[in-house]
Length: 151
Image 1: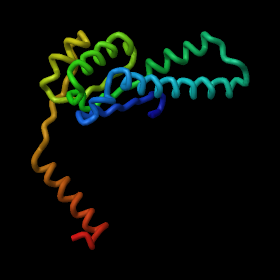
Image 2 (image 1 turned 135 degrees about the vertical axis):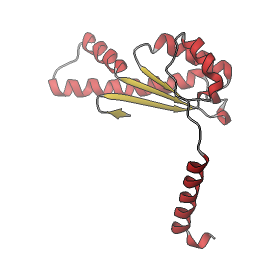
Image 3 (image 1 turned 180 degrees about the vertical axis):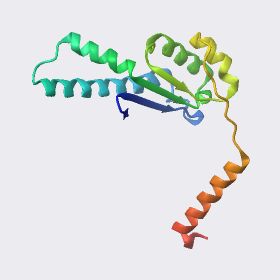
């Protein structure tokens, strides 16, 4: 997904999908997204210039693209621990210039810091019972308005 000049990739981890959420598949999804966006950028550049792109230009666009990329891995704690560790190591070595945003439960924070070999900026968020209740009541009311016969 493009957001202004930046590109944003989002992956949601799900504990119910352990068999397909392996490092190869996760990184493959990110790579497919990144390459697709890079190719689109290169083609747009070529179309504007009405000439062939040179290898140096393609590499420049690719590196610039990676620099302006954001990767969000949501619910990282739901990955199997070995998969999570391997993925974090790959992020450390292969995605150095991309900005990475991780979400997960607090118990994986030491593992993430160790695997990435950095001290991350963290923000701890807790659910508020009142907010949750308000959200559910709003959803129920909205559903009742849409499907009044389902009572």
